[in-house]
Image 1 (cartoon, rainbow, N blue to C red):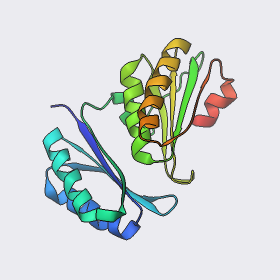
Image 2 (cartoon, rainbow, N blue to C red):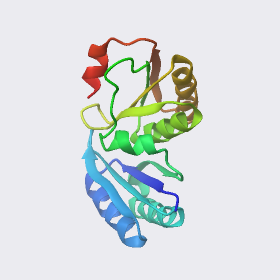
Image 3 (cartoon, helix red, strand yellow):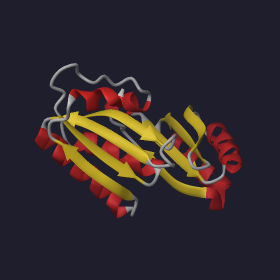
Image 4 (cartoon, helix red, strand yellow):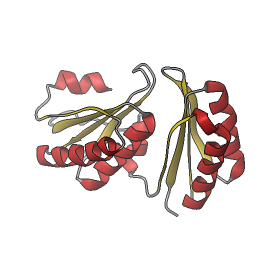
Length: 184
């Protein structure tokens, strides 16, 4: 079975809670997270088989109507994305490689960009910040060889730029260990 993720991002906490409840009742999915995020938005993130996630996301969109900010359905999610989202990724103690960063205006867009970047190149998603304490933005951090990180950031940035939600992206070729340590 391939794991799919689905997310609906709302600009109302009340409507987001109600709509996420419908999402988990519609099909056999697992609720990964349902929470308020800055600035007063709400996300419902689910996983399961692709068809179940599709049904659940559609139900959340229907219930949320004009309160829906962004959505996605992501089949075959990259494993390092889940680790970063759950804060279980590990930064190597020495020579972790280059650091790539993509910053977006929405939570859904950063998850899509991070997955596409990780699938496009030999990098690891080492951290994923979604909405809390960063004004509702999304930020993904990648590690790997410089050329791989550059390629990954280019792919991820392209995904977000198409949606008009890119804030900024950078590649730091040789970050100081203090920068790596600040990500943990």
